Image (cartoon, rainbow, N blue to C red):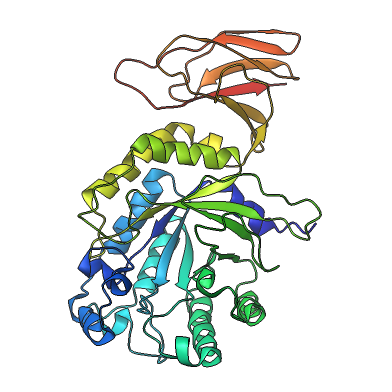
Length: 398
């Protein structure tokens, strides 16, 4: 089996931010609104005159991601409406440079990521409601699509990867994947190439050049890599409400605890969580979305070490849901404890001698006993007014 280092590096990051931003943000009813409302293209493109993005949008976006504990950001450089946030360099005038903004927003995004130490990734649609050739001359459309992606590969320096979306719409079409992926490898040999399989085919493995399987809004599981030619990473993408793009009237937000549970479930299966935000028309993040990232950041502030370069370990924990991860960096273990508000006896098997245990959220020492490999301790409740959903205990061994 081929194991690429850049895939392993991607797998270690744990948490990323997904950003859905474009002309649809002006309408404020999600990224598919042109399709759902059957808005004529000549009417939809008029939103370019209203597309005015704040100068500091990228700084605030990246800062929010970094403070939440994200290691990478995947930005929708072009979504299904065909509008590009990057300078299309003459391919068309349907881009941010020719909008009221008058700037290359992908350049600003990449520059800010590099400045703040976050890895930039590019989402790019495969569907295109603006380009007539998508339906009338598919081979010509694919040439246009590859030329578009080539700009992203050539003009913005080293990137983390490309995230494609839409092949699920026409699985029987010849998308000429060899040509697309070969072009990417020419310019970005160590870039992750991801092609979303959609909500109905979670974890499906595809072309040999793809580096990760996807789970769109679905709980990840361990993928079968036995007798496979190449090692693959796993990523789940998730939204707070029901829309990926800005939708201020979407009130069906998930509890913060559910989002945090998604993150923990992902890491138990070595999957990254790609957590979405839909910026407002001016590029800034709404207060509620920013608040959600801040809450995730509270948990990550204490426990980020337990979600980075880790592997699940079968340790026979006696309490339901509790589990143990092995830290490949520090050569220690982390026990995820769900009983944060009560005192309960927890036991788990450990074939190495445990020298110390402590909670990451304050470094409180844990008294324990170890007898014939079985470790026993009493879970301490969190202090009044504090409930982190899951407490993580660091287990040091020798």
